[in-house]
Amino acid sequence: MRFSRTSTRPIAVGVAVCLAAGFLGGGVASASIGEVAKAPAPTNCRKASGPFKVSGIKVLGAKGKVFVPYGTTVTGMAPGTNDSPDPTSAEQQITGAYKYWCVNTVRIQVSQESLVGKSGASFSSGFLAQLKHVVSVAEGYGLVVVISDQTETAGLQPGPTAATASFWQHLAKTFGGSKQVIFDLFNEPRVAAGSTSRDWQVWQRGGTVKGVAYIGMKSLVADVRGDGARNLFWVEGPFSASTLAQAGSHLVGDRAGVVYDIHHPGGAHDAAVNALTQLFGARLQADLARYATAAEIIVLPAVNPRYIPLTSFTHASELVEQALTAARTALAAHDTHPALARAS
Image 1 (cartoon, rainbow, N blue to C red):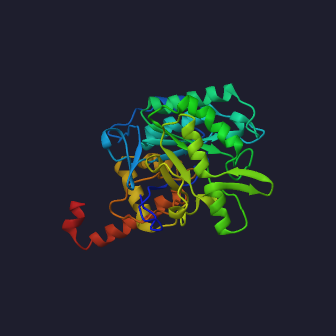
Image 2 (image 1 turned 30 degrees about the vertical axis):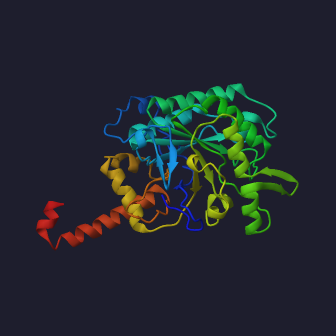
């Protein structure tokens, strides 16, 4: 985690990175659900337990343990306007992520329109039942579940509206008391209000832009808390969650219950190598190769005690190649020191 220096007090900042488009969809199309389900359960994975809260620039879980989530974003529950949800695909992704990647967190993209319609006036009990099943699968593996309000695939609204409030009102009733569930209140806010200052103002306080009334993140946080949700909230920054540059002067309240979230950060090569090193250390080499062409590695908010630069989080195949290149370079250097080479 990092904190914004635009505030007199540090705020918890997380890094959630890009939708895993096609994760387990393209790279594992040949693998049946049964094949994934039959895979042995992983051992020695670091699981996390809630409830979660913010303490300074860290997120703490049960018994005060620092929560370092890492995992994948799951598709299937955010279909396009003319498509149907695919809970089976979502279940397969979750199972594969748990058994092959040793994740402790899954972030489920959930279509706002599928649950409450475009205006927020309708309600689909069938869709909610499907979502409950998908969440139960993840919880059954002991995973932390992040529910993310998605409007990019259907509805196409760029910011929270009354429909968003309706969406969370229903989900707060169902998941608001779950210690393992985190609410990601709106995926990649992107209201273009005309200027940077106005964009930040609308993001925080709301406002009418091009005839559409948007709810500010501050009001949305208060509304969902008012609905009874005790979950940790992730609040993504404006400009498609690409920046938190002015978050310190545009806080949304509830300091103990909110993590400020940024997507797609740039970063250095050594961080990519570090991410791959951790995955290789968990004996996931075969899985990395299996998913490399279709998946993107996603690292969710994490404590960063060594101040490792954030990764660029390009496709996994690129990260693998970069890691292999770095490994070959290191081994070539070690070749001049036989004893060191043997020790490694």
